[in-house]
Image (cartoon, rainbow, N blue to C red; front, top):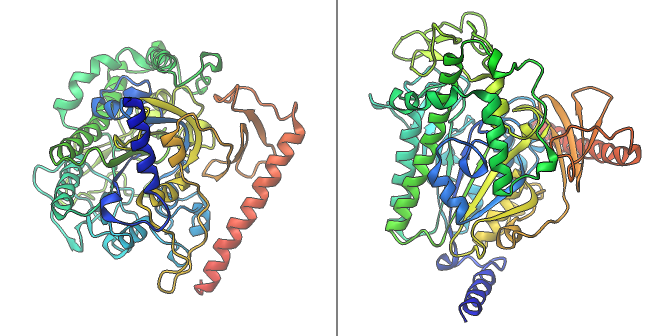
Length: 536
């Protein structure tokens, strides 16, 4: 009898998503949380040893995706997330993280949901010249973020805004804590108004620099003295036990430049790097816990959809051994006093310049980034799976009938716009003012969320900083930029991309390359036509 009533309830919920149905009482709240440079295996629910209890509980009561993709780098992923379009259609070439979004042929998810009756809010990383409140968001808190980042201080050319007003940061400022605080404040405000809401939390963590309070990272150092070799094996074993990966796939080989842990220089410094990174991830998790607490207190958790993902794979920056330079900000900038309080930044890292504090500017390096990518190949900027796969958790007590499920449905960040529109009962506009948006290229993932056994084939394409790639069904072709040679992998049996089948299946490779060429010509034509129309 209970099963029958549950089925009737689910059918009632599904019936509410007919196009054009925008009655506020039927619309779920939506919280979309994105980490920055988080690896596929960092969360506990994806095999990691980092303490993420709140996200793990969302996964246990929700759905985890194993084959969800991004655009391998910050700005292009955000462009696709906000618009439901290939980033190349919007002026991005996929190579530069801070290229602008071309607004003439797109609309943002915030604009569409606000038209559907939602209160729209955002906290975090905003990489545009126009303010978020000018593009469909009712509330905004965060920086107009560029490459010079501090978790403890305001820096030049990174102004912080609350809605339309530039603000001064508090003396006890810690970046992720402040984003968490405003996210909770915005949700409380929306709940008091009684409207459905959309909150987009664009975290900067765990993007470098490695900054965290000492009380958060010092207790973690001993854990990471075990080293990346042992910890990668342990993560892989947990992934097998969780049912995320098949043991027959194995693990991608270590990069040639990464030594085994027994030969890694300065193990205590190496452990500190990963400990600070883990502390940054834990701050994200705390914010998730605060949001869940507020929703539960207001009786709103049941009909709130919480989605969590990362914008790309883990960043390999920082070197294997000690370094003295920063990250290529240009002559004279490495040691410049670009904190607004005038205190100099000391980039690089090593045993005599341990990361964590506000005067440091360091990253955790390729060894730990390879751990974060377990079991996939490569890292951020890459077209291999370690660069473009992201964890994706969807939590929705009122809608999900199989809590704790894992779905192998292939998806991409372009799918988030159509998914959220279907959840909200909102329609995609053919025209908004003078703008005529291009048709959405993604497809809704709601069926996979409600029915995790869904496994529909997809065509996906990439042009990212290091590679071009295409996936059609289980087949994937990838090549290094401007190289004539494509590699071919069967992701059914080899998702860790260890066995190139280009010589064995040349006809399959030819078909994939032809489709990539067609796609590339189409998206380039959109971009060029729009620039010409805008007089550029």
